[in-house]
Length: 274
Image 1 (cartoon, helix red, strand yellow):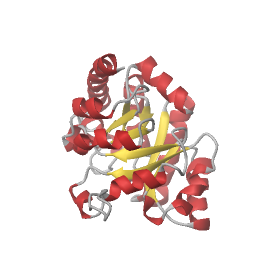
Image 2: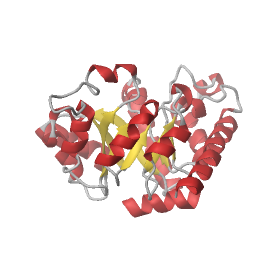
Image 3: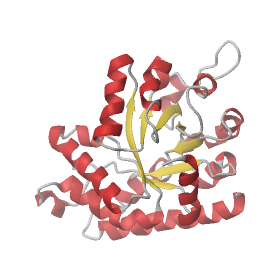
């Protein structure tokens, strides 16, 4: 999926929502746990209920890796189900990889060729050679961690360099030449919405993946106000607030209602800013 296709989906669905499939076996409804693959059954129901209201899904691989080989089977089945039934959805593997040389190539091959996702998140700490194998894949995207929503982002990301830049600003300036708006995005946490104006001065055209609304308390209005560009330029993720809206048998219906609620907010913001 290219940049223009992504923007077309935003306009068509009047949404820039990503649903985070952080599917925890300890939190899914009890009645699903007797199924052969409870996590996949949970994901399948969530996807069916929320697909009309979102443009992307973001499974965090930790929630699948914790269950060993069976968990990765659930991940693979989930990706395949989305691709087969909702091919307009953008699939992000939130894996936060970041290694060098041949190891990085193996990660890129695994997620793009074996699993078939559209994008992978990456820590930029090891520099260009950790990113290059991901950027060499035609039609695929790399999403670089810039300014995250966790409290400890101040430990490194917000430290001030000798030239006055914060470290995350250095990451943006340096890495923006690795690829282009056509194959790179950045993670910017919704709880840091006030920084989006400065970030837009550095990367005005790139899409930003913005976690942190919903359970983490970020403001969707502020994210749009400070971060939206003429092509929207935002994919805003919500995980727990949607997928765990109910833990009863109506869990999928409840998730759909929460996703629709967010989509309606996004529709108004798109009308306001684009």
